[in-house]
Structures are given as structure tokens and as C-alpha cells.
Image (cartoon, rainbow, N blue to C red; front, top):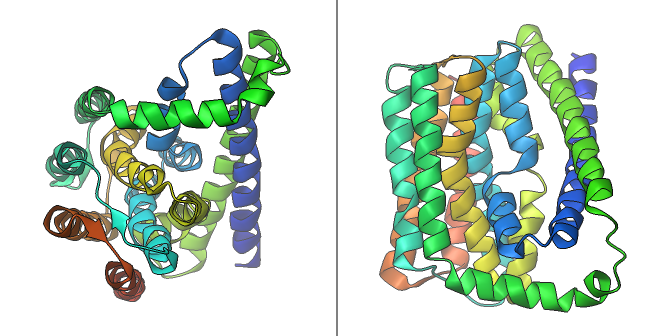
Amino acid sequence: MTLALVLLVLGALVLYAGAEAAVHGATRFARAAGIPAFALGAILFGIDIEGLGAAVTAAGRGDTEIAGGEAFGTVLFLFTAAFGAALVVAREPVPAPSHTMLAAPALGVAAAALAISDRHVSRPEGVLLVVVYGVYLYLVVREGRAVRARAAELEREGGDQGSDHRDGSPARSALLTLAGLAVVYLGAFVLVAGGSRLVTRTDLSAGFVGAAIVGTLASLEEILLEVLPVRRGTPELATGNLFGTLGAFTTGVLGLAALVRPLDLDSAVGLAFLAVAFLYAVVASAFFLRGRAGWGLGAFVLAFWVAWLILAGTR
């Protein structure tokens, strides 16, 4: 039991260190190679490297319930603990994204519902989920003029670092990115190993461990990605991260994990998905109807997270 907890904490720490190096290297590579900053931002906001690494690694190890639980657990943690905290500490209500960006993730949620309806995600279904994520990205890019404008502004704010050519060569930046991704894989391997050991040492279901423990540990940095933009007056970055991650993990991440190994899921994974679908409906409806979200919604989603943990942990 103690070793399982040590592996979980150690895996999470290594995962964060690798992701930091990978993101830093990818940013430098984009600048050095002349890749538009928005293209990099669309990938990083949508796919959480730690969560993707944990889900794919779990599938590769044969822990498919953990893989599925991690995919939905990442979104669940983001919509509750991270977004809830951001709303509670916000100085003013968070404005809604465009109606297109609010509705677009529904495509991925519906696709995921069909794929997991029989508690099995095959490789052909994995391919279709990845294709659906590609459609989602197309919609985001087409609708992303406001996001591109903000990305350009952020790039200008960091122009002093980019204009003095200290970003290095594309080759060196690419190597840093690859090294970071290798560390991410190592951290994900240790994290999933700890999750697997915890399953064998406790009565917790594999799906619950993936959703509530591995998904949470792999997503702790999402609290900062939600709270800081809201506190610093750029809430569109927080809502972009929120709905972009929903679109990615219900389709692309789940599909990639299924391509590595077809996923056999348990009831805890299904419960996590139902929680994600419910939260998406609540948050999107609040934005649609009110045009903004405040501390009341934040308190609700935080309370929902606690209630879900209690319910899922006792099943």
C-alpha cells in the first residue's frame, strides 16, 4: 500500500517535470521554426500531455479500465475542482465563449457515449473517435479569430525573449521536446504502475482509481491553468482550456488509447462519463442562458465533485 502511494506521487512529479520540459521545448521549436503560435496553442490547450501519457500508457500495460477512467477523470477534475475554484476566486463573473465553442464539444460527448455504450472501445471505434476530434479541431480553428488575436498579444508580450534569438536552433528545441516527452512517458508509467498496485491492494475498482486518483494527479496543474487566467483578466484562456480538454479527452485521447489496446471498461468508467456529460450540460447551459458564470456555479461543481467521489468510491 505504501509503495503504491509512493509510486503515485513520484509518477505525478516526474510527469509534471517532463511536461514542463516538453512544453518549453515545443514553444521554442515553434518560434525557431516559424510555426504560428496559435497552432501550438490549439494543441496544448486541447491535449493535456500528462493525461494523454497516463491514458495511453495504461492502455499499453493492459490496464484499460484505468485508461478509460483517466480520460474521463481528467475532464471531471477540470470541470469541478479546477473550474470551480476559478469561479469561486474570480473577481467578476466569467463571460461565456461563443455559442459555437459551447456547442462543439457535444459532438465528442455524443461520440464517446456511443463508443462506450457496450463497455468496450474497439480499434475501429478508436479511429472514429480520433476523426471526430479532428472535426472538433477544425471547428475550433475556424472559429478561433478571437483566440488567435489573444495568442498574438501574448506572443508580443513575450517578444523580448523571442526577438533576441535566444530560443536556439530548431534541432536543439526539438531534442528538448523529445526528451521532455520521454520523461512524460516515464512518469506516466510510474503513475499507472502505482494505480495498478493500488487496485490490487484495495477494494477500489480500476475505473475509479483511473478516474479519481490517476486522473486527478495527472491534472493538478489544471487548477493553475483555470485560476490564473481568470484572476489576471483573461478568462477566455480558462474557458478555452475547459472546453478544449473536454473535446480532446472524450474523443482523441480515448481513441488513441483504444488504438494502443482495445478498451474493456467497468461501471466506474461509465459513471465518470455520466458525470462528465452532466457537468458539460450544466456549465454549457449556464453560459448559454446567462452569458456568464459566477461563484454560485463554482460552488455547485465543487460540491458535485465531492459527492461524485463519495458515490463512486462506495460502489
